[in-house]
Length: 212
Length: 212
Image 1: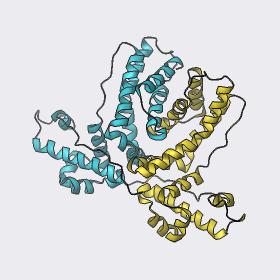
Image 2 (image 1 turned 30 degrees about the vertical axis):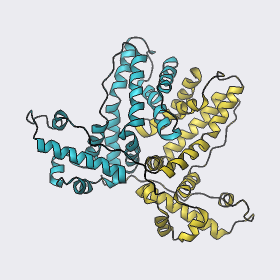
Image 3 (image 1 turned 60 degrees about the horizontal axis):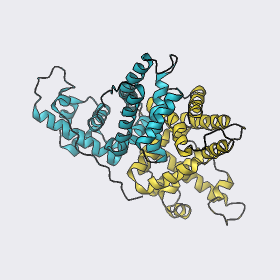
Image 4 (image 1 turned 90 degrees about the vertical axis):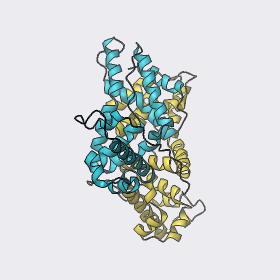
């Protein structure tokens, strides 16, 4: 049990807009030192989650690893949970909501994007650490639940549009369709470990659309 | 991030048969001291996984927690991975393969059992720790993959029987159906957190059977 799997945790890519987004009344051009310390903080948080899980990525440890003072970190994040979630958002940014003209087309784009992110992105390897933290820590579980609701907005939006176009029966439970669409992709990535090919995600979409 | 969620890790229930199962040539009645030390070892392993994740449940730590000597532990398990998996099997024993006469009936029993185990059993709360360990540790990932294959035998058996009875098209990919059946249950338990009601698992089964 000693060989560590290499977990890629590249520097999160943050543009100036992202750095300023927590500060709606900040000046247009954010202080580059703030952007740099924010980036170092998020990168250290990801490294520590990869090494020790969320429980090991305390503000204390993130400060020590990044060299960013704890007071500076607390100025941007009230506690550990929102910092960890911001670090994940930086490496797994929200996909745009597609608009291909058909529900099937939109779902194939979204589910293919999810499969790509889970298969090859660093967020995929770190995701179980978030799920694990949610089982251990009620505050983190609450943040994670809010994050899930936010993440599912694009798929709910395309389902809602499909419903309005008559591509789904009027009495369908859209949140249940989210579980039936995304669930098989998660299961294949984390449980069965079979290949996450585009043909698989397309068949999942077709199965749900044929029997919603 | 300080409130710890209570994770129930009851003593694993091990009968004499289970204790002897690793020793096909052991005498009929196992030494009760062996059974007791095995039980203490597995209970300590579960406690430590709940507290620290798989990485924190080393043989060293399990020995210290259980009071069972390391040499005694190594006599039963060559290293940490098989011990952790045995501890999980003790709290989440394999369900019997149902035989209700129809594929739908069998799948409803199996998927309902999975939902119950993930929702209310201690194994559900600890499962993300296993997934997390599989992302960090190649040896553990390999053991976990073998365990998944073993765990899916009942559902593959009922699918195979349904195929033979003509309840599924001849060209269907049975392993893909496993992802499409179990995936939504995992997703609801760990991602969306919506209620895992019997009506949900029944609709998942019906969706897959109407559009396999």
